[in-house]
Image (tube, rainbow, N blue to C red; front, side, top):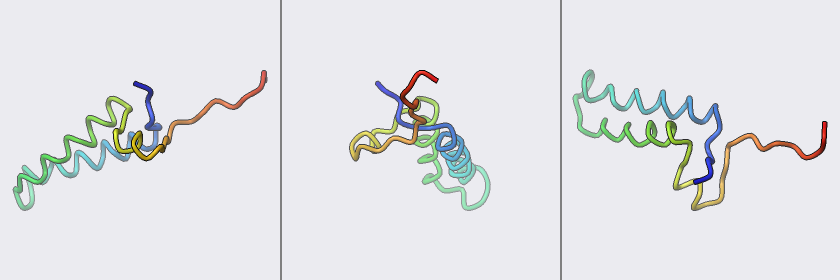
Length: 67
């Protein structure tokens, strides 16, 4: 699969995922925090199925030319 998640997007997803996962340990101790696994997996693989579905990519695309 072609990656469609850029570096900044990956960092944000990992941070957001870790914050959600922390809800299972501290704070309200809710099982909803396990949803944090989803952004972490997409960040580690570099592929977001939703981005692919709607045709979005945050990857830096190489510019044309021989420079």
